[in-house]
Image (cartoon, rainbow, N blue to C red; front, side, top):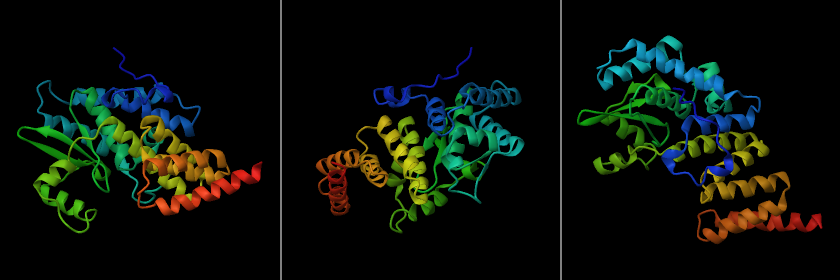
Length: 281
């Protein structure tokens, strides 16, 4: 039976429950913004073929860890998926079609490939929205196996996880409770929003305001209450000279978050949007 997800409509995503969001389907939908001629069936078939190869390589009663090793062996050794260490901020690392074509990606896109292959062989592999690099986790026996997809699926022990988190927590290593919260599974919505936030950051840094604004707008299609995306879309509109849209988004941001750390800066940009709009009349 073909389990290929149909590409959904952007306008339907906000109403879906988190886990009803088709992870592969929305990832390809994100890619289709940049590659309008993308054939989703081609990439869905590629993921299914990866899963079939894993299934053929394991026994029916294989333990979860054996199946996970088979997935990592196939993806990172036989096929050659790898983290793009040399060009980490290349936007192609975030577009799933490019990741599947080039076998190069960033942590979250490689995790997405792992997760989609694992799902098709019955393995409950989850993503972890870890500070810094995205990770994956697999429940095993009385604990969990945490892996780094950017580094060939390498397992990470508790000490390394604490050290990695320390760099993003003001230098303090998390205690057991804090680490447990950090390692909580990420929802599909969280994963997809993080993909788009990564793209926004790359394009903003390059001054590509059209694509940066598009990325922020797509976040709002998934998560209409996302404050950062509302602000960023408004700032993008301002950079593009769409003053009415900029004024509306920035005003709504300040109304919802009047005491935000960047409220003063956003108010200044709102004044600019008003001046620009006045010049157009």
